[in-house]
Amino acid sequence: MNEKKEIETQTPTHQTRAFKNFPMVPRVVFGKGSFNQLGSILMPRRKNADAPMIFLVDDVFEGTDLVNRLPLIFQDKLIFISADEEPKTDQVDALVQQIQEEYSEAPSGIIGIGGGTLLDLSKAVSIMLNNQGSAADYQGWDLVRRPAYYHVGIPTISGTGAEVSRTTVLSGPKRKLGINSDYSTFDQVLLDPDLTIGVPKDQWFYTGMDCYIHCIESLSGTFLNAFSQSYGEISLQLCREVFLDALTPEESRDKLMMASWHGGMSIAYSQVGVAHAMSYGLSFVLGVKHGIGNCLVFQHLEKFYPEGVAEFHRMKQKHGISLPHGLCAALNDYEMDRMIDISLGMTPLWENALGSNWKERISREQLEEIYRKI
Ligand code: NAD
Ligand code: ZN
Image (cartoon, rainbow, N blue to C red; front, side, top):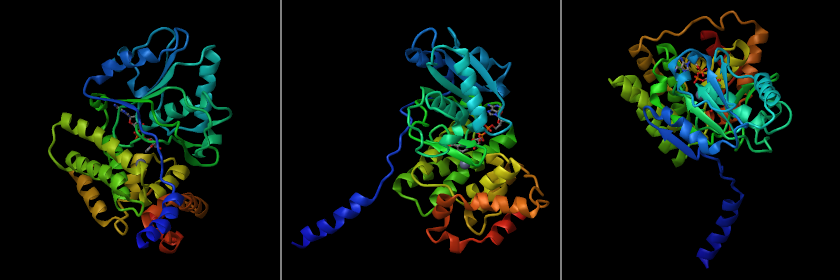
C-alpha cells in the first residue's frame, strides 16, 4: 500500500519534467589524413550533376594545398569567406541569395571548412536555403520549421565545439544570438587534426581556451548532471594535457580536437557561465571575437572560478601569451550600460553559473568593475 502510494506521488513529477531530447551528429570521421575521404563521403549525397555541393571555406586557405584536395566536380561551387569578423545574419542572407540565383537546382549540400565562424555560417546557410525570410527571423530557440539541407562541418581549428552543437551563433540587427534548432546540427563531421597545422599560436590558445572555459563553466554550473559531467571531465583532462603537459605537436592536435568535441557535448546538456555571458557583451559592443573575448573576461573571474582562473594563468604563462589591455577603460556610460545589458540578458548562463536567485548575487556595479579591468 505504502509502496503504491509512493509510486503515485512520484509519477506526476516524472511526467512534468521536460528532459532535453537533442540531436547528435549522426556521422563522424576522425583521423590524420581523413580529409582525403571527403569525395567518397559526399558522393552518395549528390542528387544529380546539376545539384552542386557548395564549399564555404575560410579564405586563409586560398592558394593552399587544401584547395587542390577539395573534391570539386560537376557544378560544385567554392566560396572563400573571411573569418576576420564573426558571422552575421545579413551575410547568411546574401550567401543564400547568391546560391539561389546562380543555380536552378537546389544544392546537394553545404560543406563548411574552417573555425567556428565558417562552421556556424555553413549551418545557417543550410537552414536558410530551405526556410523563408531572413536568418535574423530564426535567432532564438526552436524557430526553424523546415529541415536544413545536408551539411558537413570540417573544423580547421579546435575549441569552440561548434562541430557538435545544435546552435549557430550569428550577429543580427538587434542581437547576437544563435539559431538553436534540431536542424542546426551537422549531418556529417570530418575531424582531421592535420587541418589545424597552420593555426597561429595566439589563436590556437584563444580558441583552445574557449574549450577549457566551456569545461570550467559546465562543470561548476548548477545545471550539471552526469551526462555533462562525463564529457566535461574528459575534455578538461585533455585540455590540461594539451596546455600544461609536454605533448608532441601531433598528440596535441589530436587531443585538442577531441577536447573540443567533448566540451561541446558537455555544454549540450548543461550551459556555459559568467565568462560567456560577459564575453557576449564585449563582442556585441566592441566586436571582440569569441575566443579572445572569453580569455579577456575569464582572467578576472577568480571570484567565480578560483581554481580554473589560477590554472588559466599557468597555461597562459607556459605559452607566453599576453592579452591586450585597456579595451574598456575609455568606454562611455552608454556603451558600458549596453554591454552590461547584453550580458545580463543571457539569463540561462547566469542561472547556470549562480543559481535561480542569480539576480541577487550579481550587480551591474560588479560587472562594470570587471569590464573596466579589461
Ligand atoms: P574563427 O573561425 O573565428 O577563426 C579564427 C582565426 O583562425 C581566423 O583568422 C581564421 O582564418 C584562422 N584559422 C582557422 N583555421 C586556421 C588554420 N588551419 N590555419 C591558419 N589559420 C586558421 O575561430 P573560432 O574560435 O574557431 O570560432 C569563433 C566563432 O565560433 C565565433 O563566431 C563564435 O561565436 C563561434 N562559436 C560557435 C559555437 C557554436 O556552438 N556554434 C560555440 C563557440 C563559438
Ligand atoms: Zn564558447
